[in-house]
Image (cartoon, rainbow over the protein chains, first blue to last red):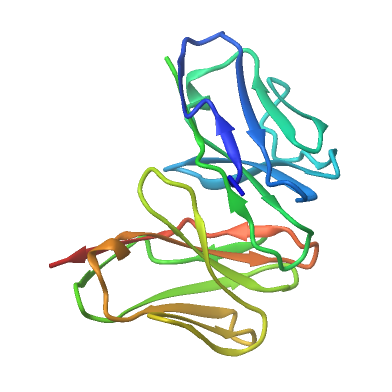
Length: 114
Length: 109
């Protein structure tokens, strides 16, 4: 298995632009998570899906952030408009079921908003 | 509130042993995870404890005391490649993972 695949790996954009991050989870995994990691705040859960349905989006910072999972093999995290404080590494992770199952993380998307 | 505490940074010598502590206060408990994260890379799973005691896996061991809200990760025979951040995460009663800020481990020759 290729693991969790994220794109782009690096994105540099200007304030106000729309950013779309993409994720392909491991085939057969029912849960998909979007995390953000910064030096100041560490790993923060933004949103997670179960069987393509958003379950908890309480971690989404504000309305500028949105996430979708149109099918079991694809999810997007969109920021519109982007701001410099959104600069971070965004990780996607998937797991087979809830409970004590190990998260497998993608390589991350490093976003820099100028 | 929910809280996970770990030291920010530790330094150890190649070939030695190091213990990274994690204390937690969470709403319920459904297990504790340790992840390793090399600089610029994704976190990768190291260990999982749900019962009290020591779990050994090669050079790495993880200990849990639920009554004390305490865990540690023990790394033996340190190698330069062990230089990384080590993240402690607790699964609460809602099966949500609460993450610590991570401990940056620096290995010196």
